[in-house]
Image 1 (cartoon, helix red, strand yellow):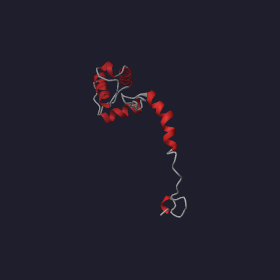
Image 2 (cartoon, rainbow, N blue to C red):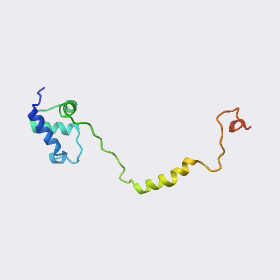
Image 3 (cartoon, helix red, strand yellow):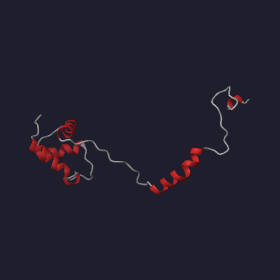
Image 4 (cartoon, rainbow, N blue to C red):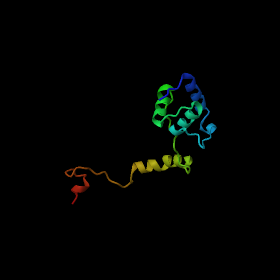
Length: 114
């Protein structure tokens, strides 16, 4: 397997820093297959995606990043309102609930009342 020279690694790094859209990809997300395509287009050297990861991590100092996923329908105001108003009410529990015990021999135990 041919190794990339320091000059080739530098060209690949500059190409990757331009972003995926600069290389004709539809989104701003790098995948190993996309990086492999850029490496091949930049240097003429083809790498398996498993080796691409080793190259990125070990030789180029890149790390894996995962984008935060958020629902399109997310309503931050509604979430904040729920957390401020509903969650404390739910956390308290029913107002008229009496405290029970998990012990069958304890008088407070619901299971001891028969």
